[in-house]
Image (cartoon, rainbow, N blue to C red; front, side, top):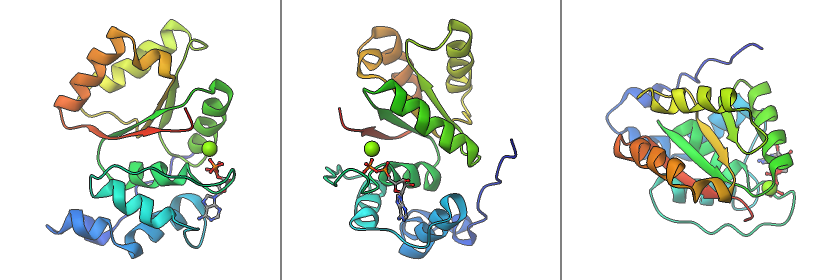
Length: 168
Ligand SMILES: Nc1ncnc2c1ncn2[C@@H]1O[C@H](COP(=O)(O)OP(=O)(O)O)[C@@H](O)[C@H]1O
Ligand SMILES: [Mg+2]
């Protein structure tokens, strides 16, 4: 599978990075580049700008409204990992597959993964410079001490950019 290179956002190299990466133009660029959609729908942009500014956001949208985009775009706009907590393994698998097809580094951790596959993901997370942008996990897993300690490590390195709770 061909991996898409990072979108060369000209403003990502300026020192006004944080503010400019939240601009509508930059975010629409990411949406077009990675997903091929021309514009945000409903309140997506507002939700995305809210989480990018570090605030909490509760997003209520109908099924098919495009809630996933509200954490997928932040994962592409920010350095670090977006942790997505989702209770439905089949849904996680589908989303991760669809993201990978678009060249976006996404992984999921669940009981259906082999120990070997899990170790590979953990290795990347421990690497200090993880390539994973979105990590989908089940609520059961985040409650385990093993995962909590891994999460603390990622957080202490400043690499946990967002925790998204998707329909738990
Ligand atoms: N801005 C957008 N323009 C067009 N399609 C979009 C946009 N945002 C999301 N979608 C598409 O809408 C569909 C539903 O999105 P999804 O995140 O699964 O909805 P929800 O989780 O809210 O039910 C997906 O196919 C997604 O790619
Ligand atoms: Mg959804």
